[in-house]
Image 1 (cartoon, rainbow, N blue to C red):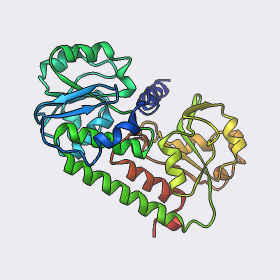
Image 2 (image 1 turned 180 degrees about the vertical axis):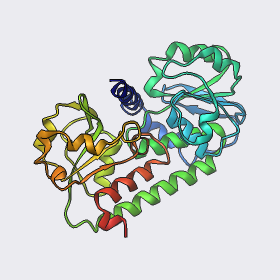
Image 3 (image 1 turned 180 degrees about the horizontal axis):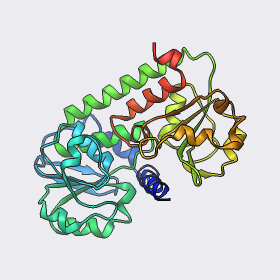
Length: 318
């Protein structure tokens, strides 16, 4: 029961981060915050809360309220500037050594005590944390709400926004270009796939099974490597019965909770009702790192590669 509770908590965090409130003006704002923007200060950024945030000078102290923002900030080379991160931050290793400021309900007093020049908030928690964000603003701290990325394009936009706010636009452009180039190379290689596989992705195990439907990074990744999402008729992070996946008769099963729970393959194989599922009969059951396929940031490309090598080793392990 304790193990399931831990998995459920991690799932709730994933859903809060990935399937939170979408930023309504992402397309409109992309040009303003994109790679054409100048990195000189002062800069004014229209964030995901539709606020125009003016930053007078390059931030020397930054607090991140969510793991995805933290990963992006570290990729931008802001290790020294980051002084506080959320309790859930686990990558890179340097992030685990930073001052923890709380979880989805952050500690306002602790953040103020760190005296940051900039706080990187997130659209997925902007509404539930509005009071805390307002308190930070009233304390004279600049707060930028980063868009809730639902796909790769949204992720590129989030990287651009953080890069512009921190004066690291050149590095941000480099990261985005590298991600686009790598994804293009993966898609090009997918043309070698001779027979498309139907894939069932399980992001949380029984007794409460969740999968990834339309509008998730996982669905986009499967399409990129010419694999069919068995749950493609569902939307977002969907809860299903134990019998429902059997009806899909998937050729391969991918779990994403091995990082938090032991032996996911054994759990799948132990389900008696699943014994005639092609993926189970052929033991095509794989586990990929949850954060790499759900957390908006540079490591999403690693997630696509993990999926590709697991599902189509004959193509991607050459």
